[in-house]
Length: 101
Image (cartoon, rainbow, N blue to C red; front, side, top):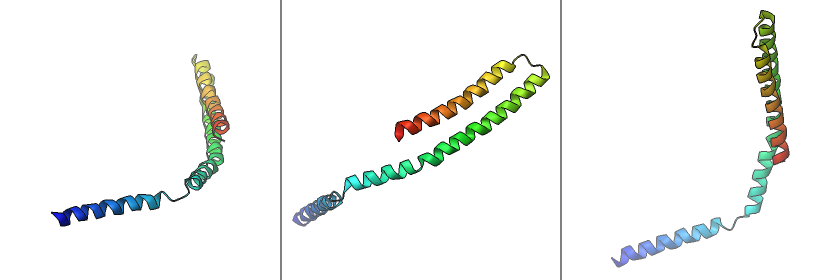
């Protein structure tokens, strides 16, 4: 019984000392590195969102043109929805960029 209690005490002490060793690191450097990594992805992500907005706008323009050419009375609703989607993509990318950077 005594041997088992010493074994548990030794295991607890080694665990606590391991936590102390891990806590010795510089946390600010890790946070700064993570922040730099996240912000380095923001410019490519913003450009990707702008490109998606351009493609959605082109597809929407073709769709609206086809509806207008065929005389569909629902053309203005379709144009407004596609235009709104493009504006949302552009504004959301700009707001996220200004909010996080």
